Image (cartoon, rainbow, N blue to C red; front, side, top):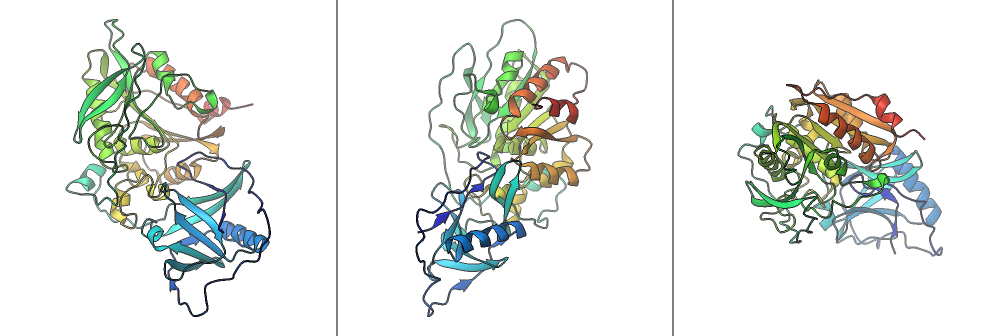
Length: 421
């Protein structure tokens, strides 16, 4: 019986509790039959902290192997294992830990995947870290790198989920044209005041291809509706993307979706009640990652706000990246850290220091030579509760950002004060 380990998936809910104790101590076998000859392949690396933690758990509970697998929901998982099948499994080693990976999972793990252990700010657990790779692409910009490229998808998936119908006074359902076809979106209706308003395209987290109910109020601890913009008087558009809801196309995982986001922004600019020079872009988590790629692909946005992105999508795993994870070019085209220095519009990246994707923010900040990029690790905030207060602050400033050029600015001090207890 495998023993699951508590771990953090940085693109999903952040947080974990204490590990559960086994119900009973039972003798476990120490490995496969001596006659079996397993195939040796080191597919996963443990950091010293992760290796030490795993060795301690193994000693405590009597399990000789660590299994790294991809489950039916395409989430990456860690288990302590009593045995393995030398025919179906591959055996590797890192930091004094024997690591087992079944062959199906092996085909869905990024080359050079690392497992780390975090014990800070009250959060404890394992996390997957995207591998560091040498660049496989020589093009200077993301649009240039994508010219002529055809992705090879491991899976062709679409949601086939009907749209939730919004209250007519809050949103109307529209369709905008993208290279994938006509895609659905929620859009703030015309306020009928004869004015041209600032507007923002907002990309949700999780399965950012599909949109759902985003109009009811949510607790400030986890408000992913971006309703602060709508309530302030900023026109708000939630695009669904290819393969999401009942849209044409299939999910590509941060590739063709970039074109959809750009098409949504073009739709907004043409509306009679939108100021075409004041169209902004924002997103959270996977949506935050996607908006950075869109920012690297267009200089038409007034400013971009990215909450909790990753620099390298390999750490997301196959659930959100349905291409060949061992192909460095596929991953580079989807990883904003590779293109952050090419962004030509004001771009603000936020993440809470309590868990979340703080490592990615730090990596991008260290590598950045781009004066258009600003990175804000926000003390006392986490991956979710930073949204409502900061979006309220941004929305207020967007209304005052009426000059010829964007003059938005934020400081770490004012952001940190939003979360002081």
